[in-house]
Image 1 (cartoon, rainbow over the protein chains, first blue to last red):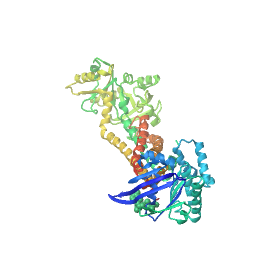
Image 2 (image 1 turned 60 degrees about the vertical axis):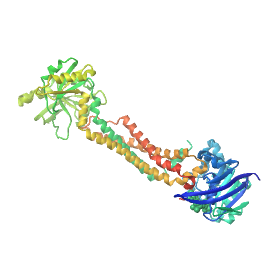
Image 3 (image 1 turned 90 degrees about the vertical axis):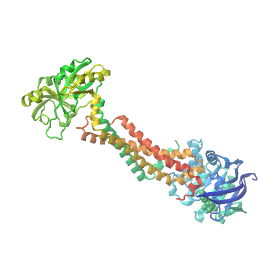
Image 4 (image 1 turned 135 degrees about the vertical axis):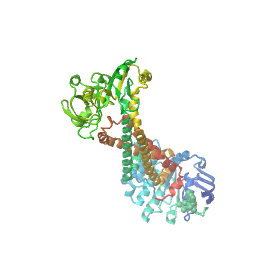
Length: 225
Length: 385
Ligand SMILES: Nc1ncnc2c1ncn2[C@@H]1O[C@H](COP(=O)(O)OP(=O)(O)O)[C@@H](O)[C@H]1O
Ligand SMILES: [Mg+2]
């Protein structure tokens, strides 16, 4: 449990808009151990999503280093990063972001299209992932035929189907009612406890954050305990 | 291909938009093929021409004739293995709208020089026997429902009066390009009456047709012919049959050129139509592409999706266009059959039409695809639909 899995070193991040520099994150240092469940809280605009994106390798720091599982990901090329993401990261979005033209099964299968798995192997993995999230009976449903909570569970199945070690969730319950929120949080707890996934979750909601082992706060681009 | 399903589903996502785009493409490809086919039709005479034939006409203009007496002089030139002549008759059948080409030809020699007109031997014999016999092309006979033995009356315009004929033969073309819509009557029938009614117009022909044994000598022989009649009352202009036919095309030069430009514009328009559809599509899906990239899909996959969709729509549009071309071609071909002996869609034109639509499919996807792969993931994800 004590092995450092995610390491952020002296991260500084700013965006440029019309030759105007907008600083977003200042001097972030963060170590997250393997199997950890961390909740990142903070007001809107404080830089939570940006921080998560840096760890996910879909954005790059202006300064500093991001090391995940021993890999310096800030130095990788676009394509190498894409490959790395497909093998190491499961990402869960606030608005689920399922493909509307694909049904639940096909949405979960999507990341597996990047692997060498054949159809049968893919089917097995997808069915396993959907059964973990409790949606085995909704495989043929399209996103617009599912409730918000169900959509998010499909999205979680999509995030775990490649069996990544690190799961990143950006306000996964932000758009859900109480009961669905509870389901999703229990699911994430299970992924952490039962399947030993390292989870970093951004949330507004103290009740959601309760399930995490560690809570860190971000305010105006700076990290607090 | 694992991604085909996604491409196909994306294509049918906005069913109306995709259908309208395909319809637009189909109509444009059809228009392209029909226009190129009519350009080909202008050249069909030239393509059907034989390199072994030269045509001698009056140097001033086609409307002036030449004395039939030239025949003996021309025939003496070395390298000429056959000579015949023809005169434009220009009669009206019932109504001026029923135009078709009519030539008064030398019964003994004309068809020897045009072996591509296939005539059954008995019909040819019947033509030889009767002064007012005519041989008509298969298509012309079909057009008016004529058969062998039918009496036909024409009203002369170039040569005034009522003229009575009997159909004695129907020829077919040896090749696809052979014209099958011409009327051949006997020159002696015409000339005999001219001698009686307007003697100054007798003994005149519109053109001589020469057969040469060596096409490479065409220029040399043409020059010899024209030199024979230099400074005479009727100077000649001798050229290959192909050049003669092409001079008709160049008379219509600006029409043909205009058609060519329109055919290219049509392709330009389908490019705009499809590019617009693809731009709308790709813009709507920017956040989906960002999600796919987050999952680990690379630029090559996103390019595949966008180009795949564009080319797929273009291909369907192209194929539909070719399918609707055939009924349209029959309509247009029938309407223009007096004008063009042949209105046939060439397989090359079909390939060109399909190729153009595929090219359009590729071009239309370039900008949307570039935009999709250049948009940073985080920007794509920030767009909340
Ligand atoms: N791609 C971007 N371009 C410009 N500014 C951005 C971009 N992403 C985030 N920002 C800005 O950075 C700040 C933090 O954003 P974000 O990380 O989304 O905050 P949070 O997730 O905590 O609400 C905001 O002021 C936001 O406007
Ligand atoms: Mg956020």
